[in-house]
Image (cartoon, rainbow, N blue to C red; front, side, top):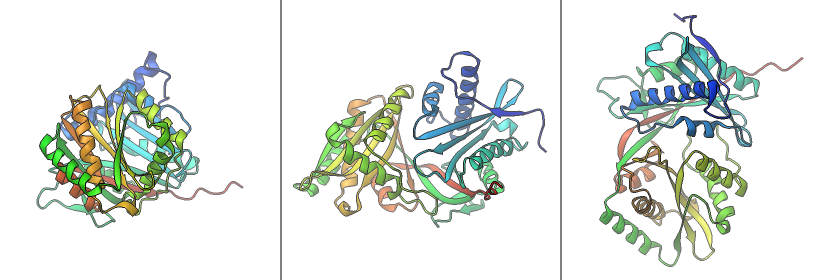
Length: 370
C-alpha cells in the first residue's frame, strides 16, 4: 500500500554543492551510490556528487531533470530523466532508485509517474531505462524473462524486473557486463598487438591520443562517434543515429574534464586513404583510481575481418598500465548477441560480471490541443 508521508518533489540542479540546494543534490547522489553499492557488493560504480553535478548541467545536447522522494529530511528515492535535444527527440531516458528499506510502498511508481508526465509533456513517445543484475543471479530453477532479441535474460523475481514489467516496460535487450583485472598480462598483450599489427602491415596504422583529439583528426573522429551510436546491436530499441561534428566531440571532451575524468583513445587509420576507420575509448576518474571503464569500440564494416578491434583494444590496454598505473579493474558492456566483440573480450582476459537489461515503454499519444 502506498504511504502518504513520503513527499515527492522536483530537485533543482544547483549551481554548486554549497548551500541547501547543494546538500540536497549531494544526498540524492549518495543515495544513487548506496543503491549501486548494495546491488554490486562494491563501490566500483561510485560517482562523486561533484561529477554527477557536472554531468547534469544544462547544455546544448541534453536536458536533465531530477526528483527526490523524502521521508522527512531523509532522501529515500530519486528519479532522473534525460532528454536529448539534437537527436532522438522521441525518447526519454529514465532512472529510478529507491532505498531498499522503502521499496514496495509505491515510491518508485510515484517517481516514475513524475518523470513520465514530464517526458510526455515534452513530446516524447518512448521511455527507455536500464537495470543491472550482477553475476550469480541465474540460480537453477529461477524463472527468467527472455529479452526480445532472443539473447540474454533477466531474473523475473528481481525487484527491478518486477518494477519494470508492472510499469509497462518491455525487456528489449540484454548487455553483458564483463570485468578483467588490470594491469593486464604484459606478455600476452605484446603478442596480441604484434600479431594484429603484422596482419595489418602496410594497410593500417594506429593513431593515439589522451583526453583531446588532435585537430587534424577531429572531423573524421566525429564520423566514427556518429556511426558508433547505431553500429552496435540495438535490438528493437527505438534509437536513431546521433548527429556528431567537431563541436560535439569537443563538448564531450570538455564535459569529461569537468567531471574530473580522463580518456585514452586509439584509432586505426587506413594507410592508402588516410581515413580513420575505427577507434576505442577508455575512461578513468582519479576519484575512483582502481576502476577503468571501456567505452566505445568500433571498426567500420568495410574494414572488419583484419583483427583491428583486437589490435585497438590490446594497445589501449598497454597504455592503461603506462598512464593509469593505479587501475586494478576494467569494465566493459556489450550486447549479448555481439559474439564477435565478446570473443575479443575473452581473448583479452575479461570474464562475465553481470548483465544490464535494456527496457522500453511506449507512451500513450497525447491529445491534440483543441
